[in-house]
Every structure is written in C-alpha cells, then in structure tokens.
Image 1: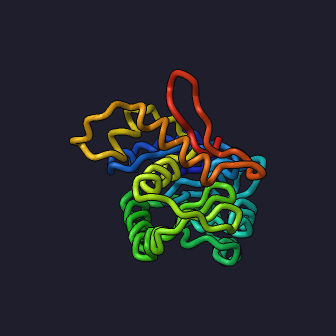
Image 2: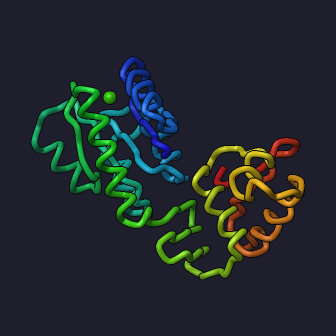
Image 3: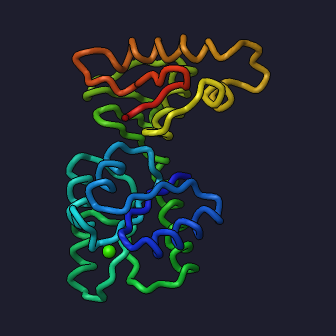
Length: 222
Ligand code: CA
C-alpha cells in the first residue's frame, strides 16, 4: 500500500512518515501544496494524507482540483483548526475523512486503515495516470476514454507500472513482480512487453506516459 503525505511542518512530516513506514506502508512525501498536488495527480497512491494549511496551494484546493480531474484516491485531511467550517469545507471539497491536530498516532493509524479498507472494498477501484485508466473490477483499460484490449501479461505489467507511477523500476524488479517465479527467460522479455504496451496505450496523439530510463528501466507517469 502506497501513501502520500503532504505536510509542511518538517517534524510532523517525519513523525507521520516514520509511523506509517513502521506499519509497513510505502510512504512518499511532499512538503508544499504544489508538489503534493503534482504527485497526487500523477496517481499510483492508495491514500493521500493532506494538511489543510500548506504553502503554495491549500489542502482544500488540492482536493477540489484532484476530484475535478477524476482522481478518486481516498484523502484524509489533517486540519489544525478545530473549526467546523474547515472540516465541512474539506468533506465538501471531496475529502473522505479528517483528523484535527494534534492527534494521537494510534488514531491516525486507525483512520488510515479504515480508509484503505474502504478503498479496497470499492474494488481497489481503478488506477489513473493522466488519461490512462485501469479499472480493476472490470479488468478494463482505457486511454483518453477509448477501450483497449490487453493480454493477461500486458494487463499485469500495466497494473504494476501504474501502481508505481512516478517511480523508476528496473527490468529485474518488473520481471520479479509480473512474471511467475519459475519463468526462465531473461529481463529482455520486459522490453518486449513494454513495446507491446506502447503500441496499445501510448501511441500518438496521446501524450507519452511510459518512459525508458536508459541503463536503468522504465517509469510510467513522469
Ligand atoms: Ca501546515
């Protein structure tokens, strides 16, 4: 499970990050609103922990923009103010839950687990990167609204790349995650399948999403 924390207080950011990593989550961080928005928009997260008062873009604005773009990642807002207005505004903007600072870390963990569980029940729903959408409940892939047929292996590869959007993955990492353990071919098969995926979901006029990082591997999203 991958969680994005957007928080501008370094000490709190570090404490939350440490707590969640300690519970086995994969944690990414952003220290201002604009960076947080960019990361959340690229997608690949199971949950976003979002402070309300942030430099460069407020948590409320980030939430509104993401929802307007169709990004449905669960959002847990962290609000310093105990004002009812602030909480209502957060939920109306599209946040799923909120926590008032200062909060106990056990409560944070409980809320995180509840939201992740809810997201899981919604079918793990869909993964979105730009205008590329992978619908897990229907096993369907759409690019710019157009449906594309993928083989089982292409689908698994795309799902893995989308879950890790924005991260550079080596061919060996991809091979280990997507191919069965007894597969006896080499990592070149990854190049072959990335080529198939490009032909199916990443051709012009669509904006290229799948990048080759020379000598390392591949990254989807940026
Ligand atoms: Ca703040």
